[in-house]
Length: 196
Image (cartoon, rainbow, N blue to C red; front, side):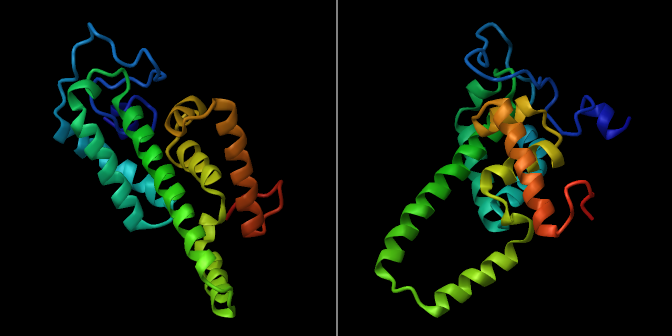
């Protein structure tokens, strides 16, 4: 059996019995039996794909590892509820994306406070320029990068990606298109061309 057949053709690995229904208020179904998968099995199935997605979204392996650990810890703390959700994988990704956004907000606030105390110097400008060059594909804004990673690399539908990002599917499609345009500009590929 191929990986795609084992995963229901979506290109993603999910715990057995996990459906890809949209999440929302109906995620917790009172009369639905809990998944027969233990949290440890759920972790083994999902951690690789989540880590890969977070590395691409966050642009840093250590930050991705921290976010992944935080997301799995939150899911583990609520596993007695999460395992009865229609889409535990979606809940995991949503939790990870919330953690990513919260970390970014905190970093922005901390950097604003630090910048107020620093004088703008040539060294700061050079460090920022080096950082921009090092970012490569990570040059996209985080929301665009997240939309592209989820829809293009992980093959999420726009609805599934919207659920993970906490936005509407139309917003995901727009962000993904903007991200692809940013990538084309960064790589110097004309709009009608293909990325290398």
